[in-house]
Image (cartoon, rainbow, N blue to C red):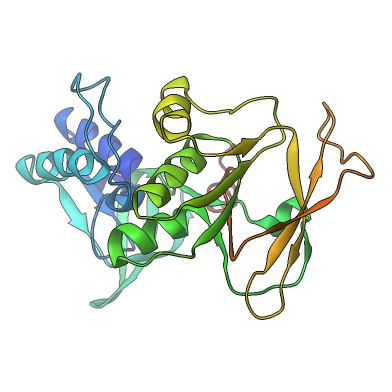
Length: 268
């Protein structure tokens, strides 16, 4: 029986597993993908590790530190492994996994969930219109550019004024996309002042505060969006709608944690 099983090999899971191993616990780290690091592999911008290392690292560099540390500690790692079920008993937890090896059962005294988040989609903020090609989340765009070398489009509308949206705007600009507009319902950007300066202001990327997207326009491919001004409560202001031509719409509107699995085993 293991002391602890950590489910999720992203930055949080890696940090938890390595720390627990340093404390002397027998730890197994389970990751459904073929490699550890989670979303960090597609985050090639710097800014990671400033508190730990006192210097700015890229996502892969930051993940590499924890991966190397896990190996040096002899951490038991299972990649390409899906956790099908967790059964809680009074004296132990049973973790049922599926991998190329088949179905396995692991027993542990405790389980740490580090499942990460998913990106909120435009359906969750009730954007109208059709479902043409050219609508992405910011994380998907990062993956397309950084891992596959593919640009999503040439005329881009970014919805959301947080850090990820600003970083994606800068990356698109540096890759040659010159028609970019960032819109958000707040009075000003919601991200770090550093990113506002380095990602938006330094490159003169246009932005519109107190603006939201009402509708996606296009049949087969995005042709544009209906934008609308919003009040201080983010309610659309009638009569302020306007058409903005673009071939790509990127939503950077927050994250939703994977908490249902945790709730299913009685955690609060």
